[in-house]
Image 1 (tube, rainbow, N blue to C red):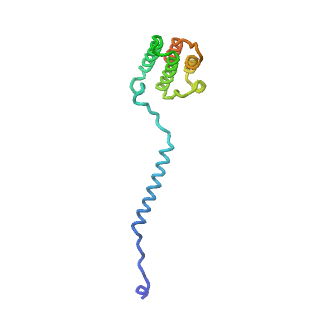
Image 2 (cartoon, rainbow, N blue to C red):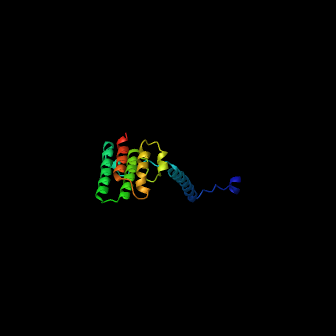
Image 3 (cartoon, one colour):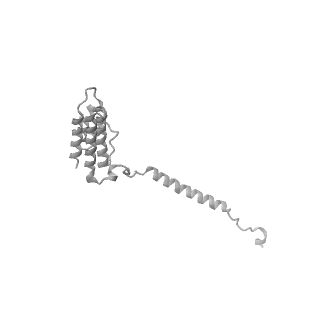
Length: 156
């Protein structure tokens, strides 16, 4: 009979091949997940210690108006140098916009801010700029504070 003379049963695969296939499939899935995670748009987050996270939206204006008044008072008493007061007012206005809109303006130049569709902000920061960067004598801190207050109050 032919069966007795040369028929051999098929050889089984080693379990190592099963594990190698599963490992390759897991690596392919992991690579796809890593690519999707690395290329997706980040969610806009509010820092937990920012006023927008702590204060309700209605209190945001009052918070920044109070901080502007504090800077103006500190500059008036001499506790804060005039140039530092102008810089602080510019920063406060930029932080207000960040907290109100989520758009970070703290590192934008005046030209960048003018390109943004934010009414009144570029003009206010433009009026504060001479106090930040101009040579002595500096404009009054009161005028810069008034420009910052006007921009905050005009925000809807």
